[in-house]
Length: 249
View 1 (cartoon, helix red, strand yellow):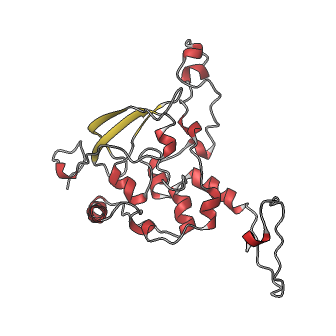
View 2 (view 1 turned 180 degrees about the vertical axis):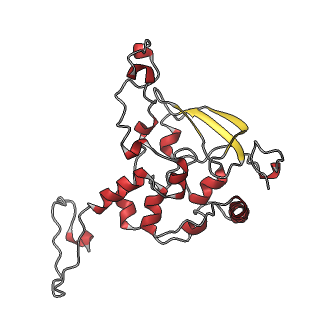
View 3 (view 1 turned 135 degrees about the horizontal axis):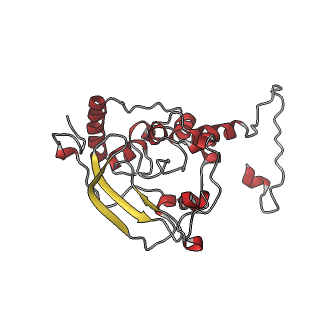
């Protein structure tokens, strides 16, 4: 079954149309009066290769233009943003979320099996109310403590900054302060964070950002259960005068 826009035969019934993208608050930006360009079947999804409706917008003042990278079906299967591919609820990479919830990737990577899986997911999404995630994530238990410690509670708009000006790096930029790109020293090309792959981010494998967060999580101090079972007292300090012992109980 050919679903690609560049294939010789098209199965246009599988092409995706949408009126609004599935985005996180960070990618959407801080401007409440945002304007978007909508291009019907403007691009192939980088995961399933199906043509889908592409949205493009400016994420804020002095920020760069952003666009959707994957179709809404792939986005809903993993409950991620269509642009940054981070989890919509916690703002974390898929690899970190699945590791904390002990989830396994159910999406097949071969074309035929992936298409069959997507058709089943479309039926599930059509019959659901949309209030809960789909697939294995929707059946997961209550979020664990690790997710609550690593998750972002506020949007991180710094992620929407313009790219670094390549002409400035070469010492050839003539725009000065009017340049729409950043005049900053680029990061080390040998840094793992400089080499990120969208499919690795989506499938939750070999994601350098996730590996960095997991290393940070392993360094967080943990409260271990004492070997002496007769110890039943727990001291909690530095809570302030407004917190009472009754509230702790």
